[in-house]
Image (tube, rainbow, N blue to C red; front, side):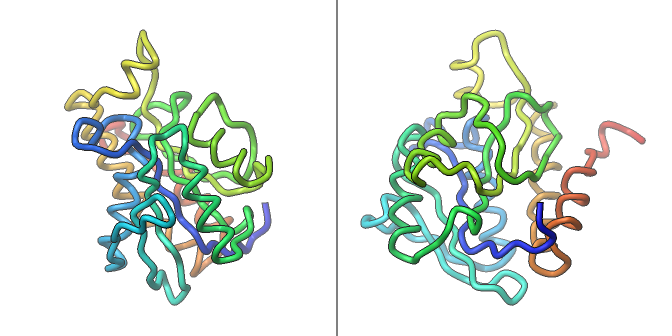
Length: 199
């Protein structure tokens, strides 16, 4: 992973509609909203991009924020449309998404790699010509007995508390990508442990 990253597009994944709000599968959307609030970037519907989108400054760098308003398994339509219009390369994208293979409260920043069965990532990869060479910020949601019901359900209060700590930390540390480089941002994000875990 290079020490510098020219991130131009940050995508928060989730499903649209009140019944999906704050479900485990919408953690990427929840984090995107925290980032938008932190950097005072207004998100507005953009029908030509099939999403809710905003443009603003993060630590002096111009960045687009995008929440695809397709369902999760069609997320790539919005990402592909924005990338084609603004000439954004896969290496300039950061996708925020839920991750079954991490426990609630864990967050990880990585570049490339597998898709771990995530339908949003599968769709994005397909619309980027098969490229998996984009950054991902993985938000742990843990695993339940039934994956479908688990990801579309809302976390129990204890897990929700861990997730809120993790999302807040991710929103605070993400600016390090622009100020200190990807290695420092990765170290800060991957090293985060919720206070509830103890020392």
